[in-house]
Image (tube, one colour):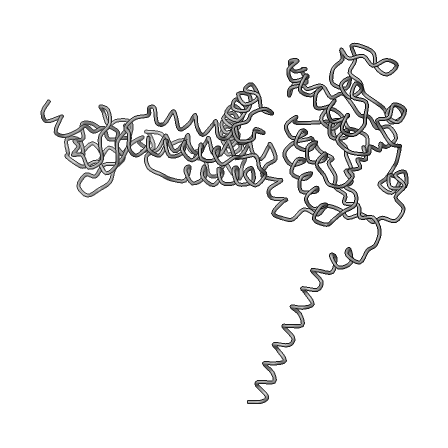
Length: 466
């Protein structure tokens, strides 16, 4: 007995040792950082288009830097610009950061990147870098109407004033009609090279690395802490990427479309619901999808379900449901605060609705076309497609002629027929289509003919009366 108890204690001690060792190794990075002395510089990088992923990355960086009590927030930036909504959110996050914010422009800070850079306390640029050209343009590069430029000008001006930079130069990066004496001429949008930015006070200095930036800033005793994204955040960043969001919307729209073509609830509904969960969950966590926008989507789904099971045909409930679903998907991509759409003009919302519906439908139809092309041309996948010609001469017929024996028989509708559904005849279930209007479930039916490989039925009572 003592030997057995001794073995159990030894096993317990070994497990406890390994658990403690694992726990210590997990905490070791934090322990080492806590023991480091000097100025803590929390670093993150934006080297992609300014969109929702870059916005979330910035917001997480500000929160984490504050949590770790960092002394400096360091942004390594290289972008040609992107969405105005995301840029405004990044600008606000950087302006509200409780610690000084340094930005190191590695080659490009164009358009939205210029606004983000001006929101930082100190700007450093690499050799050959540029900052400016912040006019608001659409996806084709066409300059947007003046009301958009006016809003961008006001943001650039306010941001420049906040951080002690020349507001006229900031505005000139947006509006070619603004002339700044000895800096920019009328008719051209202002863009600074590194040398020009230093000369006119828009840049603190030229550097080639983060270490050189620290040296120029006069920070001697420092250490860097790089942003580390958890696997959950990586999934969220992946799901809120515009391309992935577009694919999810495509699945939602396609699922609803196919569900409306078939009776009952099946795989298309499940696919649409899963895609909706994957679409709304990260947008909600990201702060883009409001509660009422999700409720709008749920109400839309409810109306479609009501249309399928409660009302015959397809009418007001179904159309209203589709409108609410599309509106919810588009509004969840729009930067609004409750019912305040200051940063999302009506034209922007309409455009996003059109994009959400148009691209999703086009992508859905294209995927079907491409899939059929691959199946019909690929020698391996082509095995699942029927290529053998089945002719009448070799004994093949296009439909089961024994189904003609069911003509004249009485049965029961096991589902709603609007017009397609299922019927039971002689304890067997068959696919059928109503000849006139909708037939309710459990209604007695009569088979009037068999055509196009399908039973055509009518309400037995009405047929007899007739």
